[in-house]
Length: 386
Image (cartoon, rainbow, N blue to C red; front, side, top):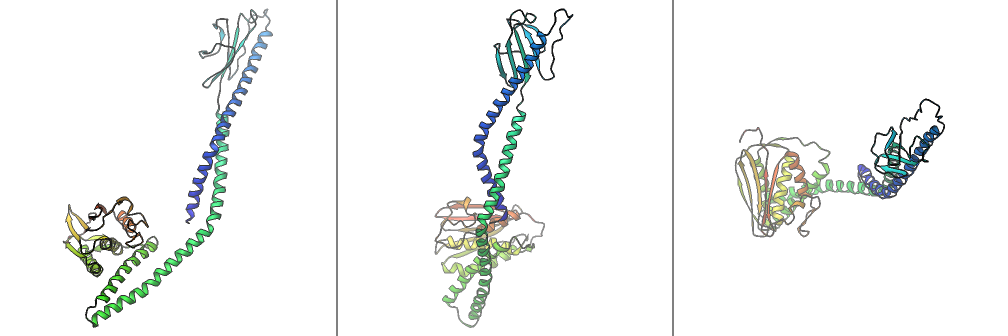
């Protein structure tokens, strides 16, 4: 398991737990808002008592009454019909009933006064703006603390639980790398000895079959080797005579095609040199020829064409085989539509990574049980025509 996967799965687990905790946290928010609203009502009552106390202490012999004013509270006196006698409230009262009222962020308290006692006023209204910012800050802080705690705990447990699997994967990766390295030597020896045998002896169909089988194995080896090393190596580009290159790969796979009595028809025209890595181009060509042979019916033909169109090099591989049912999935690593055809499902995944990197356009035309055409359109280069 890669190191960054801990953080990914820990984050997913954290979000799930956080989502579960949101329900009680939501009710906690409502509860805290109610508490805050009750506290605000008590504050309004406290200020109203100060106003009433000030009016009670007013001596009518005094020249005028100085109405109490507050920094964050507004108040006013109203008659029985709720007409303003004196008011500092810059707000249109909506609910004319004794008690505490909320209108959005506006909170006000209406207190009924004794008749004919306070400047003819029947009601005292005191108002302020109710803000839940403190409540929201507290809830967000709790949520943030929970998320951080759960994330750290998740990462710790995931790292601990995945440690044996990571060691197992590492051992398996090392085993595959060593196996690939060990396969190359005997494979090379087999190919060399077959070539030596052919030089000294007449053609032998059994040796031809062995030679074809080693080429199939060699193609699998090349894919595995590229898959293991491509992120660690830098692939240098060069000008490649693609016409000559494709023809060489066709000649190489003729023995493999002959095993299924498949004929490869080629129409290789002069084309511009392309600027890319030789090994990566071989991955594209070899995988397409290999797949065309693998999924073609026996005694059929494969058509490979190379030509210039719209000042771009076009390379197509057409087979008369089983076709593809799920074109969108064939580039997924380890995906195989036909489990009986062999292979590991990595070839086209490698091809996709290369063509995406090199900005090579790919068009696929496939009809199940009739055949498939892969068309690669290489980007324009400044190289001269051959």
